Image (cartoon, rainbow, N blue to C red; front, side, top):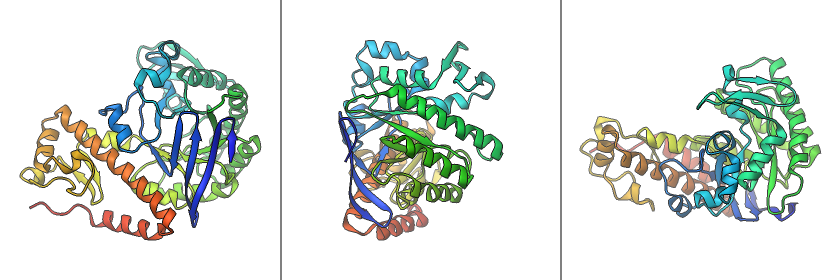
Length: 378
């Protein structure tokens, strides 16, 4: 169904609460469930844009905060927008910058209208309001724009959580008004409310009344245990329109993703696979593999001989161990490639399992493989 001018979302199959479908934007189709590699400053770290595309990613994420500071939204717009600038021709989702600004505790001042903060790069002063955030994302030529919100870290008091939730609802309305109508593009509202069920419900209900094209769940993966995160998803899901895409922001581990898909989530992003790759940690169908461990030093086997990813299939664990211990850039590149390939394979597996009505089996098989962990070294 059409959810915004030139944008549609359809659910093709459902298995329990898990679902698979397609989000059609002006620049292409995003198959769901989808994992969006994070391209914070206009690049997915340690990856060529063609590699990211060839792994099966339909959409990537850009960061408003970092891009507004360097090189600047107006400069990116003058250079043709983020797609031309980075050579990524598929859809791009940009976050609002709110999470990064809220993380600057000592460098920001919040009020009802917006937030004033100092750059972590050079100390220069900047002002971000819901309207300015949407303007920046529009200058970047984002395909999915996120409302500006206030995210509080957990644990926090109910008073602080409710204040931030109410402010985020106000900013959601202002953001949607500022977005207006942009054919082929969409704006998502963000559910806040911390770990307090009634506040989460109030936020989701308030956003649903505003009729956003899509809905994100924010303020999780900020220090709370997994069971709290999953409980909040279960709390919110019944109050989000079923005919709109649902995006869980900043999540997460493969297990987090599988369990969240089981609860009706369609879209994910996280820096985990790229960050882990730069620090010697590989994700595979055998679980996590720490290439810093000495036991890999003489292991001639690849990470996964059955993988379609050359980095996982064609390089020995011994070589990857050497590159990691030597802090070689190639090691970071290869392991990032491995991890993003695993994440995209996981999403493809989820989509296929839901379509075939065997999601429960896929979920159990994936968890069992990860529980066993890596096969021992020779």
